[in-house]
Image 1: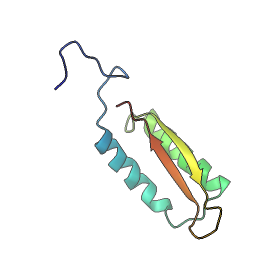
Image 2 (image 1 turned 135 degrees about the vertical axis):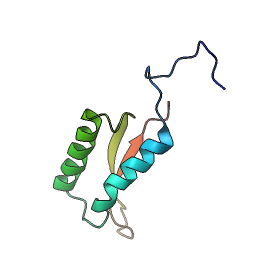
Image 3 (image 1 turned 90 degrees about the horizontal axis):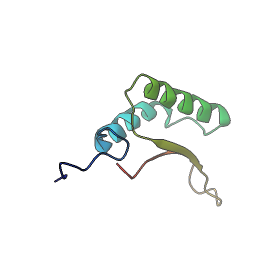
Image 4 (image 1 turned 180 degrees about the vertical axis):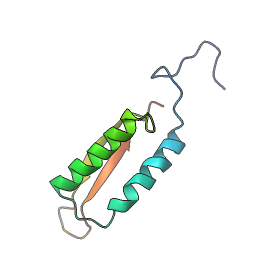
Length: 84
C-alpha cells in the first residue's frame, strides 16, 4: 500500500499490465512480417502516435533481437520501463 506522501515516479499513475496488454494488441498485426528497417519505422511511428493521443503513457524503448545462429526469427522487442 502506498504512503500518502509517496508520489508516482513519473508524476502520474501508470497501470503497467493494462498498457502492456494494449501495446501487445497493437503489435499483433506485425507479428508475421519480416523484421526490416521499414517495419521498425512503422512500429515506432505507431507507438509514438499512440503516445501522442495519450493511449500509451508508459515510457518504452524498442530493440531488435537477432538470433546469431539463425534458428529463431528476428523480432522487434518493446521494452517497458520497470520503474512504474
